[in-house]
Structures are given as structure tokens and as C-alpha cells.
Length: 528
Ligand SMILES: NC(=O)c1ccc[n+]([C@@H]2O[C@H](COP(=O)([O-])OP(=O)(O)OC[C@H]3O[C@@H](n4cnc5c(N)ncnc54)[C@H](O)[C@@H]3O)[C@@H](O)[C@H]2O)c1
Ligand SMILES: O=C(O)[C@H](O)COP(=O)(O)O
Image 1: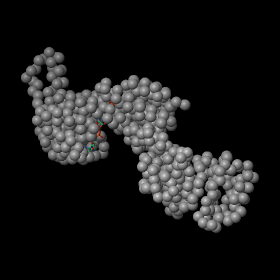
Image 2: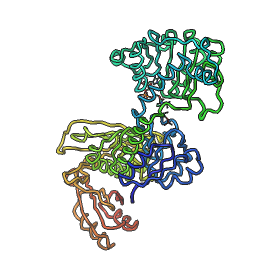
Image 3: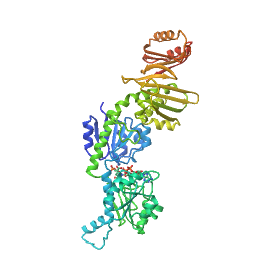
């Protein structure tokens, strides 16, 4: 069945075409995002959801999203998606981190000029027939100091434009390297320094616990008298009431805002002030940017739904289209090794340690670890998947450790999953042979060579004569056909294991009889 995607926001129709061309069924309902009840009603029918900022993906929506595999944000900010809830549900959330950066940077520059020359007020006055030539006295931007808070993708483009406008550009961003600042022609400064020196301040950080109200009343008070403030990033970065007070007292000469603490902003403390310019979250609103983000999100979502390739996910490592087929058998191996360990473990898991040896160590091991943990937890929690597994494990206090190293043994690639509980430590290793099929090659230090099969019996026994005959006879008597039979032992007469693939489910009474055989220590039915 072809995957189905719902577009619930105003995306460029270019996205619809991409989905169709890739063989994906697409339902384009550009205003649906505003109707959260209707969205909750129908979300269960879709594998993908493409959005902008109007659709709020809440835990309630996600609860109903039983088929959903991916949310694609045609834009940058994913603050309208409940990320922990999406991750816990196993839904990949991806954005398009560069598609609208230039456009948004240009909007910030446009807002700076709108403030510097009071263009909106002058326009309104002129069109009202007033011709107030003496009312509007602007300021030049040349040689002024532009202070950028957050110098990432958009902030950097604003910085370059500022340098081009012959401004002195200073930036506060704890993650901006000195080299990058030098490349951009920007002086890296501390926040207080920026506040004290900037003639124009423009914000370009995401909204986080650290950046919320980064321009608080206290910080606004530290700014230079006559400063002009531009926010084209996120509402909530500036204390709007404090800014209004600073505008009223004329400490701040002007403010240009595209984003607001509450959106859609029908009322706001800044509204109505003569030196305030507002736009309704138009930062990304150009034909070029909307075409870019729509095409990109549709391609990314299609790639994931059709090939498993992941780009620009904010809650999972990226996997390219080239890597996806190479990674696939190892994902299967990791998941099955985890599942094997999970099915053998009855008590609380404290730690899972995954070692990647040889060629596999150069692959995306984060994704493999997630797969192993998903396999490990699934016997206990059927809802868990590769995306949600690390979060679910963390919630349960399970420590996940990961080691990569060069090949040390016989295998080109080897994955070992070790599960530690209060009472035991159990390690299971596997590899992928040239046929692309995963194999178990070691259990608790005993070498074996077994393929995974849908139904298996795992037996630990004493290495004594007579066991195999009795065991096989018992299965035969129960009408269970043996598909493959793998044996291993640590030493002659020591601990032995048998891993047997059978055709069909293993009835509990058969398992009980196996368990009762004289040499048997434990027997388990396993399903993969
Ligand atoms: N108005 C719009 O329509 C519109 C359009 C696109 C993006 N945006 C918003 O613009 C913002 C920036 O987007 P971007 O693509 O440049 O993001 P980005 O991740 O490339 O850059 C953000 C920068 O902020 C810095 N930062 C993080 N915490 C900080 C802190 N406490 N102090 C100072 N700097 C800090 C980061 O180091 C990073 O360099 C985002 O919030 C995004 O949602 C708005
Ligand atoms: O984060 C973004 O990309 C911007 O805020 C744009 O949002 P929009 O797609 O709703 O215009």
C-alpha cells in the first residue's frame, strides 16, 4: 500500500507534486492545521504529516496518530511540535534548516531599514495626503553598530549583509567560534557588551529555556539609549511589556517585530506604539523560500517513507539514501540481538552495552544502538520503536553505553549486545554475512552459527550424551518440524547451548517437556 501524507498547512503546491511523483498518496488541506479536533479525528489515516507553523502537533494529536512515521516541518522552528511526545511515539520529526534562511535574514534587514527610516508610518501619512516632510527624520545605518544575538544560519547571513552595509557588526552566541566570527567579519562579544554598544539589536536564536526573555526588563535597561530592536526569530525572546515601557520612556527608539509571544497576535503590548513596526510572522514568506522548503520537505519525507533515508531529523541521526541500504541489515541484526537479549531477561535491566567492532563501527552506530534498544524493550513494551527506544530506556533508568573499535576476531563486522541486570550479565554477538542475512555467532561466550527465524527454541544444557536425541524426539512427537539446529559448548562436558528454528509456534507444554529433560538447565521459546 502506498504511504499517505497529509499536508495541513499552507505549503507550496510544489510539495503535492513531489509526493505524487514519488508514488505517495497526498491529501492537501491547507487550513486543517487550525482545526485541531478535525486533525485529531483524521490523523490516524496518515504515515506522514507536512506542516508549517499553524499546525500544533500536541500529545493529543500524536495519541491518535497510530500510523504516523514522520512529521515534516517546511521551515526551521519545530516549537509547534511536541518533540518528546513525537519521539516517545516513534515519529521522526524533520525540518528544512536552510530553505528560508536568506529570506528571513532579508526580512530582518528590511525591518531594520523600516525602523531607521520610519517607512511604514511615513507611507501611511503620505497616503493619507499629509505630506509630513519634517515629521520623519531617520538615521543612517552606515557605521552604526549592529548587535546580533544568535549567529547561526540566519544570524550569519544578517551579519554578512550588515558588513556589506558598512555597519560594525558584533555578535553574542556562545557557540560561535572565533574563526567563524573572523570569517564573517564579526566581533564576538558577551551579551552585556552587545547590549551596551549596539545601535540596532537583532535576535536570531531559537526559543529555549536559556533564551526565553533574553531581552528582559533588566537587559533592556542595559541597552544604549536610542537602540532599535528587531525580532524575526521567535516570540518570547523579548519581554514585550518591558519593551513597551522602554519605548514609552523613549529609552528604546523603535522596535520591529515579526514574531510574538502569542500568535496569531490579535492583541499585543507593542501594538499601537508609533515607533513599532509589525508583520504577521512573514519572515519566511517569499515565493523562493516557500518553494525551497516545500520541495525539500516533500523530498525528505518521501525518502524516509520509501527508502528509510533520514535527513534533517531533529530527533534521530541522519541516514543518507546511500547509507540506508548498507545500514538496513545491521539495523535488523542490532534489533534482533536486542530482542534476543530482551526475551531472555526477566528482571530489571540496569545497563545495555553495545560494542561495534570492525567495518560496522564506521556506520551510523547511534541508529544501530537505537535499533538494539528497541529490540531489547519490545518484549516488554510492544509500542516502542527505533525512534522512541532511547527515550523510553532513559525513562526507565536504563543506561545505554556504546563502544566502537577495530575488528579483533574473525568477523569483518561484529555487534555485541550485553545486558546487565542486578543478578546477571549476558552478552550476545552477531554479524551480517555476505548474503546480507544477520547471524548469531556467540551467546554468553559460546560460539554458535545460527540464523534468526520467526520461531526458535533456545536451550542451555549440560554437554552430556543423549540430549540431542531426546530433544529432537520430543519436538517430533509434538509435530514441530525442525528447520535448523545450531549447537555450541564452552568445553567438552561443560555448558552447552542449542538454538533451534522450528516451523510454527512452540506450545507451552512442549517447552515444559524440553525444560524437564535431564540435562536441560533452561529452555525458552523465542520469536523474531
Ligand atoms: N520569522 C520567521 O518566519 C522565521 C523564519 C525562519 C526561522 N525563524 C527562527 O529564527 C531562529 C534562528 O534560526 P536559524 O536557522 O538561524 O537557527 P540556527 O540554529 O542556525 O541558529 C541559532 C543560533 O542561536 C545560537 N544560540 C542558541 N542559544 C543561544 C543563547 N542562549 N544565546 C545566544 N545564542 C544562542 C546558536 O548557537 C545558533 O548559532 C529560530 O528560532 C527560527 O525558528 C523565524
Ligand atoms: O521557523 C520557521 O521556519 C519560520 O518561523 C517560518 O514559519 P512559517 O512556515 O509558519 O512561515
